[in-house]
Length: 211
Image: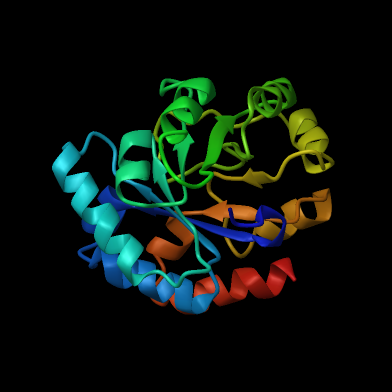
């Protein structure tokens, strides 16, 4: 299983957002990785099972071995596509249910969950999550219904060391400095890379800032 302690830049490859720009999905993923992305999440909300599985397999095929692929929502796709794990939202399956399904496989799979306060992060850790996505930190292009977390929760989450916390939501190369100053060591990014004229350079800039 990948060592998440070493991962600072997590790319949320949102299929619908990428397609809305007229860009080619796999090309954006490839360019993001070339720029320094260290983990990729394939997010395609409400996709048909065969289409999502097909895209997951193609995405897995272009990623370097050291770059984990995480599937959003569907732990079945995660296992069948030989990916590295699943990210579960609040309305998805439970951590226990996903872990039980993953036990059918031959290797340990990562499970990430979405949280917007420290209590949820603590509960996710106790339930067996490997990491959490924490947000939204700023207004975001990818989730119209995302609720921004409170400032006091941001300060507490930045200090957490017992589980990797990836702040997410509207993070750019400009405002990421605020998160670094707060104490975060890693981020999850979608729109800033997808909507960039040069995804590789944008990813490289994030890595430079994150150190």
